[in-house]
Amino acid sequence: MTVTRSVITGCGAYLPERVLTNEELAGTVDTDDEWIKSRTGICKRHIAAKGEFTSDLALAASRRALAAAGTDPDEVDLIVLATATPDETFPSTATRVQAGLGITRGAAFDVQAVCSGFIFALAVADNFVKAQQSKCALVIGAETFSRILDWEDRNTCVLFGDGAGAVVVKATEGQGTNEDRGILSTHLHSDGRHHDLLYVDGGPSSTQTTGHLRMQGRDVFRHAVTNLSAVVHEALDANGMSADDLDWLVPHQANKRILEGTARKLNLAPEKVIITVDQHANTSAASVPLALAEGVGDGRIKQGDIVLMEAMGGGFTWGACVVRM
Ligand code: UT7
Image (cartoon, rainbow, N blue to C red; front, side, top):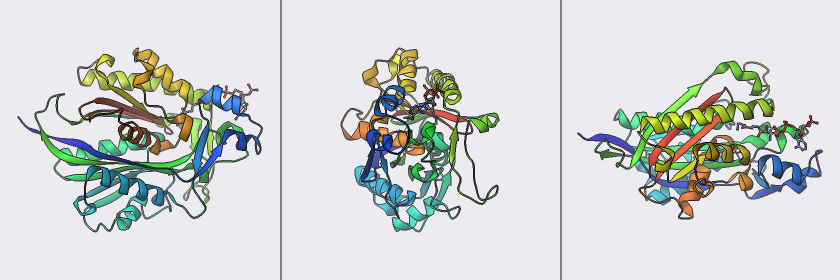
């Protein structure tokens, strides 16, 4: 029996030029390099330039993903862009990317699941491919969280950065086994009861302002460790796998202690975890595709490898995806 699989054929990343170090931040809020590094693993983050929008970051990452895949933009029939920091309330940032790439066919829309956004977007694209509604999808995670941070709140402003990552996903016939290349399974969860632990205190319908990110970090940390561990096991079980079968864990990059905790719980060697939080900080929906692009780009992640991606974010939302690259 043949089944349609969504194969990741190319990855791309883009980070804004401007780098903001911990030392620089210590000059504007009551913090220091030692606190940030020891509590989060973050050394620096990239910040979008004035006039540089989420769609600009997304477009640059998309061009690189398409080039890596050897895919002409005309082949793309679906763009799913995950962001919590769209250029505008509407139209979707995805349609701006579509126009930037000169594509006039297919569908382009945004998905909003904050830090889990890329996993949600990948699951949406995978389901379109499996339903034969797309043959070639561009899946993007792109954010300019610097625009929604309260730069006077040391609890949050040191934690986030801007960036974008993208993948090209192509419909490919497989045998329906774990040996197939492509997305093997996706697992999505939400629990809206936890709104107040991580949210933005503004919006078009509530305050008519953009608002700022607010987070009860310690509580989010606790939920993240529990939910990520559960969804990772759910994803492994669904594929009849154990952690030993994983070549790579590509986690959401919120806090190095969470990444290390998840790996420890799985008994996974630290060398099998792609870590970018030190260089990028938390880039929300962009963090997983940025980490994936880094692992593929530097040759660590190879074709045929089993990769597990996972993320957790505001809502709460959380999810995982198992892929044979
Ligand atoms: O991407 C979505 C998911 N998000 C996450 O997964 C984030 C999860 N949370 C975390 O990563 C961590 O909880 C934080 C990094 C946000 C905080 O680390 P923590 O070890 O949980 O610290 P804490 O919140 O317990 O705060 C410890 C102390 C507090 O001081 P008091 O109240 O103990 O006197 C804070 O005021 O550290 C203080 N603090 C800071 N000190 C220096 C908070 N932020 C800073 C700072 N510099 N930037």
